[in-house]
Length: 217
Image (cartoon, rainbow, N blue to C red; front, side):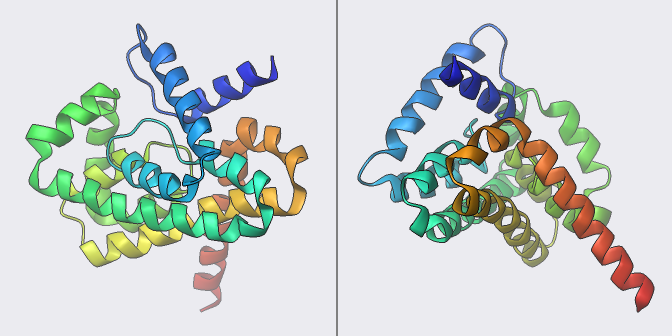
């Protein structure tokens, strides 16, 4: 029962694919990633999963990051760093897809995950608020591939994209790793079921902090 609950939680965090085959596909990918998390080269696998998730892969690297940190809590920050670096570099690949291959690759990927409507929504404001969209949305379970492809399609400044991606991904993965490092297994279920709540609170604090600084200055 606990295992099924965990799978459903991660399926909710993962992107929505066609209803006919999504549960089976996500379940198999989830099981495969859990096996990778216990593999001798789990760190390398975490990097590539983080990389791929930023442009086309459906399941977020948190699925691997959680059990890896719980197994070796002394390496929590190293695992978080690996996830951040892989995700940001994968984000650059997603940016390139949006910039150079939107019609041939980007649009099919977005259609596959049912994100075309969101893409159109973000495209309208990405040039003006791209950095904030990346930082705020990049910290949440929203499919990061949507943001990276949109950034490339709208030709967002690449340097600003990379900086915003580093901030967003670092805050997300360091948050997960930190909670697990300090609280261990008891916090696992909370993270898997309430990750959106945790990141939303963090987003509010970050945005509120920037607003306060702006008012004081």
